[in-house]
Length: 146
Length: 110
Image 1 (cartoon, rainbow over the protein chains, first blue to last red):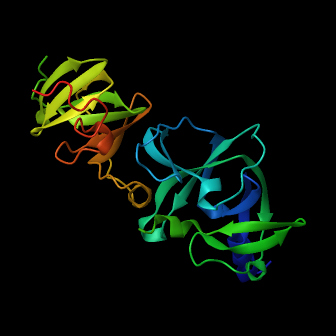
Image 2: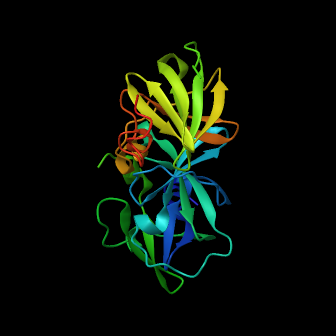
């Protein structure tokens, strides 16, 4: 496999997670760890997307609710909810966040040219994977101030 | 009860979270109903529980993600004994800590 093809494959490799009724693809390069749902301490007055703060590796970790971020309809009660510890924000100013999700599903390859109709922000676009339309996310957009 | 105006942080619990205030800013602390009233930086803060005083916290700056989804402006973030701590600037305390914004605001006024 030549280098450019390998790079393209790596860029298109995503962790697929369940968030409510949606399946969301997170760039695998941005994923640091997937752990059983961390205990989250609420931040009074925070917007609904921000569940609160957790501790991870001895550091404070803001935890966002992925289903709320993508406006997913609620799904079935999750049997094994997870926190995806990931990088957010642009490479020069990236920060670690937690994303609470209902389940981690699998690693999939999403060809860049299969992604359509994003919002220019967190939602890079949608793509068909295994008979389901998935939401492909751009975590770099999360670190931008509103 | 007076808090020592030395280094370190006073840790308290309020509204389900753990908060830290630099000891140097704490002017007084006394019981108030089921909780506590803390005098700091000329204002009054409320606590449900006092967790104690720690000499050292490694305080990290707030993050862009926090600022985007939380309108408060904490002095920083830390972890103590695996609990995340929001370090507060008592001159700009979060609404949840302000005694004049919380329930029973008129109680315990000095």
